[in-house]
Image: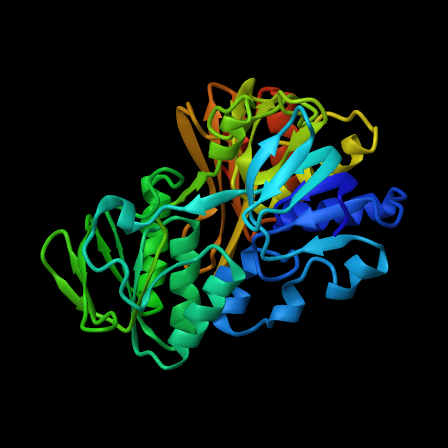
Length: 409
């Protein structure tokens, strides 16, 4: 580790991996870049942690963004197991928990977010072995190890982590029960019809669904033996995976004087309020020019594209981030993509049918403007037009959208 670097990326997740890749492509010289990571592994893809890696279809080496040798080959210092505790943007220095310090000329903040836990809600038994939260590769390893000898699992939550983890554990042969406090599958994201489709599908795969339940306590003697729900059911299990969402880690940056608002506030080029400091990924609160509001998005596409763009801008490019929000997910043999932001929609138009063919799209419109589109196993035309119409804000053909027999152009 040198005393100072031209570029430092603070955080070792997906932003860091793709930023390093981009810098190398743009002519990074040896010994110019350090990646400071509290993680134990080189930057890796997060989506497989709840999908292929957890299900056992992928191994650790297959999810690395760059090979472990990539960093040394390009003269990049990869400082693992290194946690920053203070940032001084005036002196342009970082201090670590081990007492060491390094300086930087340009810094990229990419420390992401931490998981919410039941310990924060004072739920008894949260610390029992067998109660898991999935965020890091080490988390996924521990869950996979426990699942290998398990028979019953409880998954808490019906968001991305919940639905993907439940599918992966069921594919491993475990008996899986899903519980969540909402009255239906993912109401923040799905229409009632979509929720019903997903519940039917999961139940058809053998997953037990119990809506309207929170966790009252975790029970066990030395290890988890059961989850007791808020409605009094006792669910015997060998492990529980809890998906309660995440919280951006901003305390250190607020103390350093950076503008903090639902994350670290950045401009259209991902610059923070501090000179020569950028932020990207889960922690960045960025201006969305398509929808005219600020947002923070916790998904793969944002981490990848913001990591690349921030790297280019640190090297002088001066580009603006203007991608529409994009999500994807895979569960069993379902796979969907989603573009846009459905907030404020007044009509959800279904194209196709939510049946055993698993081929439909849902178009969220306000008036005649398309705000968002959910697409599952549909022609490429729909994928392309969804993005085009959201960006253009042009009126969309509502009647043709609702009739899958009609072309959209």
